[in-house]
Length: 316
Figure: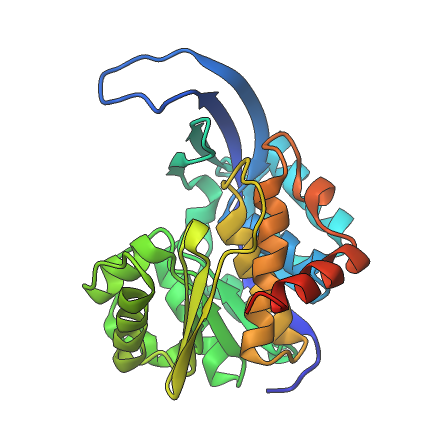
């Protein structure tokens, strides 16, 4: 791969309404909460911001509505230095929306209505081809029009760009697509659904990772496991990365922060284990801060991050 530190992410964005209560409601139950927040974000949005703040030169391909939240999204990207040439304002469809429920442990349940995210087309991908050619890595999640996602993964692969797929939310797809994926980063639930192995510990994570490699993932599978950390599975071995020891306050953005920082690490030319450490430490900064804080507020300064990584390596 050309180590030019450039990457693109096929993004997504939603206006978010977050509700926090002591416990999640059961079906048909109403509970009283103690915090409400309106914000903007989504998997692709968070991954793009994390990748840019983690040091990569990031371009986005996505659609937002011509509304308040759509323009806020573009403002966030410009603030992070993201190239928005291929972030299109869709005048016919509203920005997507998401509802988030959190309990006092920081666990969450999320419902997403895709809106403009679902309107991205293969033509949008073709229009971005000159930019794609310049990238070392491309990042994907599954919150967009899946035809466009699959098309973009195949195109990036055909242009010699390594592809990193965060398969969330899990959808059914033609398994031939695995052969165009360089790296896959599911969490334990997604890995279980995709592999057929119930991931409950490191051993079952390795088994699931091996199955995904056998399905066609080219180089490596990184399975994130919340408080258990993550497992890196390559064709010639595997390695466990325990959770970075921090006090957890909110897990909402952890997976997306990890994915974006992982893309940045790969784009900068880090070896896989170092890219996992890089991503894990940045994600730890996300979970130890409060749900009121945006990624700009919790993202670590370079010196803080380097110290965190040095301390963490001593635990391995």
